[in-house]
Length: 147
Image (cartoon, rainbow, N blue to C red; front, side):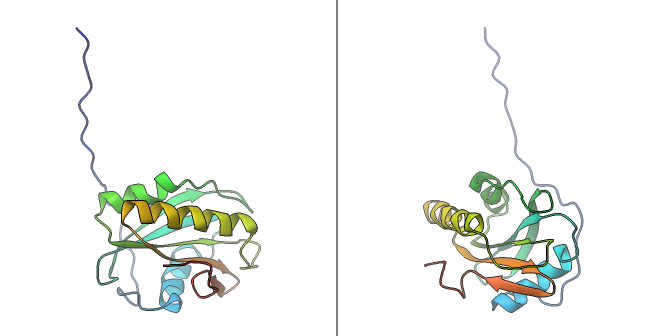
């Protein structure tokens, strides 16, 4: 007789972080929250803000920590925490330790994949922010995210 493992899935809170706002109404507010969380990192961090139906931030999840100029990100890892927290939408962001917030071709391609995955899952990607040297670029403001 074959024994099949039975699993349970749970979400574990690591800690909490103080924030000036808990409702995201603009890319600037998302930037301030992300900058507090990953702004001074010396390696590339890719994170997801988990939002409820009113764009209240219900959590932050670090998807990947990479090297000076790269971070390995796959849609399944971005949306895993979103599904577990019942997020209604997400905002993703990452830092460029070089200080230059201009999105790379890879950043734009990843954003397109994440938007497509979010559409399939019913969890829209509202924005992707790239942070660097106390500045940011919003791919939504640049017209690179179509809803």
